[in-house]
Image (cartoon, rainbow, N blue to C red; front, side, top):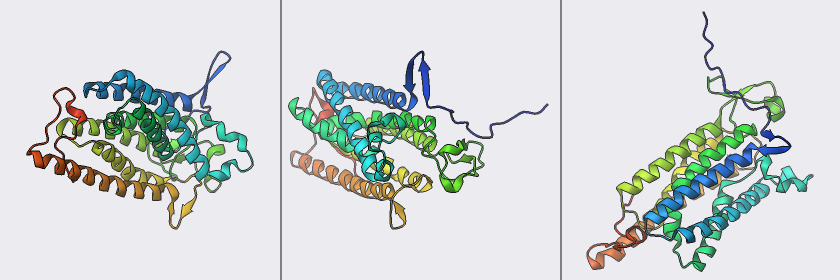
Length: 291
């Protein structure tokens, strides 16, 4: 008796599920599910730190809108050639194409604006959100599986993903299975989310440091995934644009982490100890951890 072991990961033939006459695009559903998880995790953490849950809900609502708009703009700008002859496709986000750094920037701008109206500080909100944001990215990457996109070079590994000929780059038409970079990134993001929660429980970070850790942790891994991918992309010198963005964001994030730690320690030293508020312990800078 022979046993057929996993030889590759099959891809869905269609990224749409039909509930009667209603088409459900799995890419959008994965993004929506990720948003729900991120909002739930972020709200729980923010309220536990003494924040206003209703204010958080309002902030997150606008952050999602700003994030989606920013993510789409980033994709359209960095891959403008895809829309040169079909500008109407710019609004078809269900077909894929959301740039994470445009999403982070758009969401952050929305948080800054709405948080000011609620008289809430940006740092505690950002630090509350980022573990859930990492989970959301991990979930959202499965939308790329349904769309058969974001894969790496040809591979014969047991977990290589099958890609239909219509979705393969022109120079890989004779290859059938590829590195599932979407899967690698999904696993990394889920692990990063849990790591951020564990580190936040173990150490007393200054405001914004956890956000900096998230950005550094994600971009560290994203650089390698970006260079593994074979889908067409603009390059600057030997690297893809998103690889350069990962390098810049990683360096800035590490520098920001160190800066925030030193600034908070400098503020605490004149008083002898960085004391946290009795009612909102995690909304103060407190003691810090530095690299």
